[in-house]
Amino acid sequence: MENSMDRFAGRLFGSTVSYIRRFLFRVLSVGPIPNHIAFILDGNRRYAKKWNLGEGMGHRAGFLALMSIMKYCYELGVKYVTIYAFSIDNFKRRPEEVQYVMDMMLEKIEGLLKEESIVNQYGVRVYFVGNLKLLNENVRMAAEKAMKAASNNSRSVILICVAYTSTDEIVHAAQESCEEKWTEIQSLTDARNCEIIEEKREGSNVIKLADIERHMYMGVAPDPDILVRTSGETRLSNFLLWQTSNCLLYSPRALWPEIGLRHLVWAVLNFQRIYPYLEKRRKNI
Ligand SMILES: CC(C)=CCC/C(C)=C/CC/C(C)=C/COP(=O)(O)OP(=O)(O)O
Image 1 (cartoon, rainbow, N blue to C red):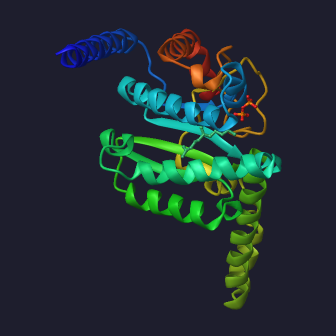
Image 2 (image 1 turned 60 degrees about the horizontal axis):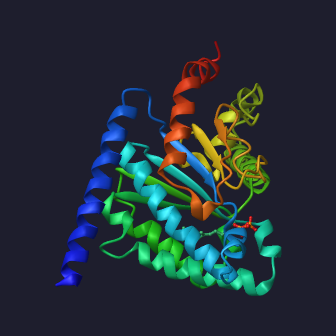
């Protein structure tokens, strides 16, 4: 009897909170809603320390916080969510920690494919972004499987940056652009069509901004409107350096596992306040 009363009270509380959240989102939607929010998940280990938990528990709490924030973003109408899940530099951490995070990632990526997962609930397309060759084979294969399984989803998008740094992304895009241009020139030379080659020399042999952007790992998404870095840090730590020139930076003091609805609402209100300025900058006027 007591148990069923508890369950009833729990459900009642849950649906009231969800009702209030939806009401709040309706009010926020009177103003512009960001299309893309990126997150630097900072402070998982500090959270574990603060609560005397094992270090791995901090990352697990971080994953739960990620699930909530993704849900809030998609309910609010934010189409793209990007997360900095693991940088290339993070591979330099203690081998046991790297192994723990990789094992957890594998488990969580496999979980994303389940029927009841957030991916299926919100029709989320999944992209793993970064130098995936640096991942161990199990994680890489699971990532590729998840991307394939969700490839028909289009309502929302999650971009999970793993084995990622911005400088690596830029170098990779520059190399790909050079290779593409080189192949193009070679094919013209092979055809021995000197006239065409001369014509091409006039300018189209030059690598343009659009070439580089086409080869960016993040090229599948528009630039973020808001970048959130938790735990009060105001550094970008080699994340989305190319994509954040006209983007609101928000740095709440909360550690990543403590991030909640109030932080999202505050970030969106700040975005709405500077929206006219951001739009002007984007249109270059
Ligand atoms: C499949 C999937 C989406 C998984 C994501 C899993 C997840 C939560 C990864 C975070 C890993 C990480 C290195 C966080 C940074 O906190 P930190 O260790 O730098 O904490 P600190 O700043 O307190 O040292």
